[in-house]
Length: 561
Image (cartoon, rainbow, N blue to C red; front, side, top):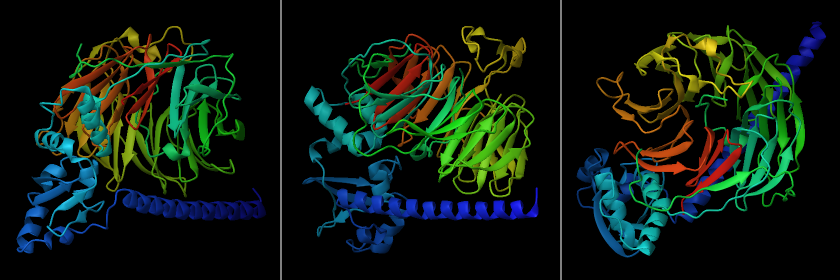
């Protein structure tokens, strides 16, 4: 390449980097503004432990107790007074109370020294008992009180309690089938589903009506992501008889593809750009509001199997054994990463300068986005790596076992043992799908089970396996290699899982046609959601709603009221 062209290319890259930095600054400013709005909506003031301790005579003693999470707290909840401890209120740190009394949000202090929460206090004793005992032993008996408590649990972000108490309604939409639902995403009131026929359908979540179809890909959709949804790292493999605690009516709302449906205009604010990857070896960037394909990203010579969008950057992984980084807004390929010796099946990107990828070559690689070089080659897995998650300086990868890696040191810090070897299972293959990614040659007659999906939740790792079970490990336990909990109930491969924000519940979708909601503290199944007629392949959750896609060619919308 001539030196002049190299100079121009470097100049263009520097300009793109500056654009990315400007966008990042803008996003941070928007986040800060939203946090201020949230504090205003919650009627709170900036929090400091001294705001609580200064109301007491022996502030140093209370500060010491608060630091050890044994401090006594007086609460005024809508005029109802309660006394509890910091440790109780912060039992689930991602709950509203955990964030308020853990220092992330603030609280109002009355002149009598109590902390004021502007909510209905009639149900708050149940909230406290749930925090103290880890379960609700005696929920309200009548329907209205139960519903009120469920709404309070939603406000306090106590997902485990919501899933125990929530009630349901059901609507069904029928129409012509348009292919197996391979992947899906939610953005605000929009649900987008990609099928094995290359069709992308956009739905309105409120009305459950078809908005439009996005056409352009010539083969199955492997992966998709809205820019705003990129906080969910790559955590699931892309594989193409408990009872509920409280007996409530089951709910399922089915969305099927109706070619006769008239598209409904998208209302409210337009969603973020959508990026899709396909077996046709291309990526596309879509404006979902107009249905326009903004960019066609070509360069991969194999199926685009995984992607992530973060901070204006798209990172894609392909069966051509490479990764590529693209500018979301211009469609320009910024970098190509070469090193893997087999298909790249999972990728995670921190939005800054670090990319992590997993491959069928049994390795995890850590890449420098700017320089395009491999920083670490992480080896140890004995089978193909199908899933990983990247949080902070920690990467969790799943193959024949689950491994936890320290990115700073570039080494494995935990090896979490998977299930024992088993005879090859025919349920790994969909004989009717010529593009099924799980090829039989991967599995000898006697082969280890493998990790289908993995999530890192605080000090815990949750894995879904091909032996139909979920396992939970505590990384702080003395024997961290062994699972502290095995959740049994599914009768098919675990396709994907989601951990609720309070880290109390896990939602799993399986090839056994069901979705299950688990309480990982109590170690039991809270709900079994039945309705799909074939394997559940993908799932998204938001605001106590679940959208699932299946090989039965339908989407189902499960909502907890």
